[in-house]
Image (cartoon, rainbow, N blue to C red; front, side, top):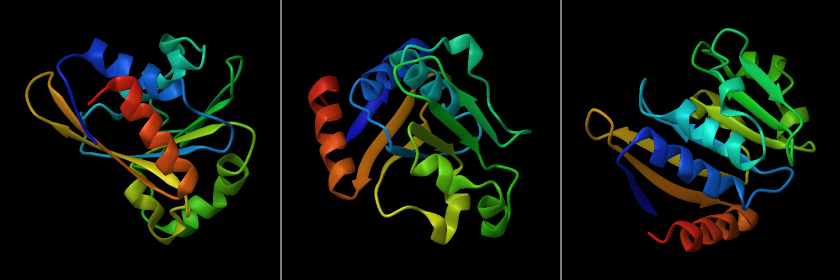
Length: 156
């Protein structure tokens, strides 16, 4: 599925649409260069879960931020500074991935062989000053169903 976002607000709206279909244990892996909209999309997901977007900031220096108080807990990972899968293991990622909330992983390419069997993959690309392209794909039955629901909601 390919989605074009023409603004920050549209990317936030896409995130809200995604959140409306999420359930505990869902994992969203974000791939894209610096400035491609990964954190903005995560803010939209947070909004859709009933959290405040102003509270959502990139966890680059702390690696993971937990947001509670919405419909589901949101676990926001930023793996940009990690170079080895061992560092991800030391974070205790499995507790989050297979826990009671939704995990969103920025720089998911850093997971390497730790990529879970089932996840929603979103590749973000810069297409202009504010224009972004999102390509959504899925691994695993649950996440393929999630992709179908998102496609119906967004209507690509």
